[in-house]
Length: 129
Image (cartoon, rainbow, N blue to C red; front, top):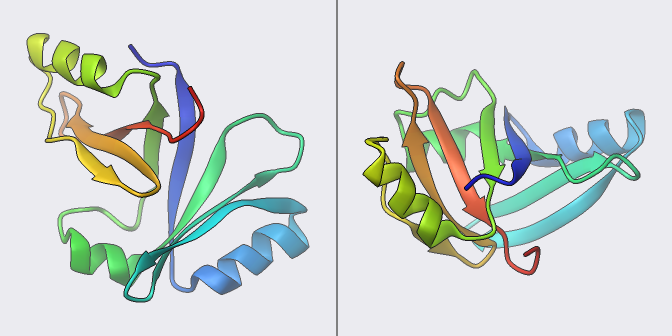
């Protein structure tokens, strides 16, 4: 059902400053930087030779406007699957509280919650499976 821990979202005050920190000071590379519309962008950084897990640097204020319930003071964990539809169906069958599948230009995904109400994202990435 779940293949890997794909991404961890860090909510940042300024995406460009965060990108510069992780690339210039920590030696990471930009793995993906894509406009999402209206001043938003999807920005991922990670070690050049460090496997598939990356940090998504997401603007705090944008997330607060999109989804006020998200705790922007805490990282978000994004898990990865090769078959989002099946994973979504399996989770619902097992009684997991799972949201609707969202289809975006940068990937399809849905939120799900653990027994304590912590939110996770399961994502099927474009071109990775």
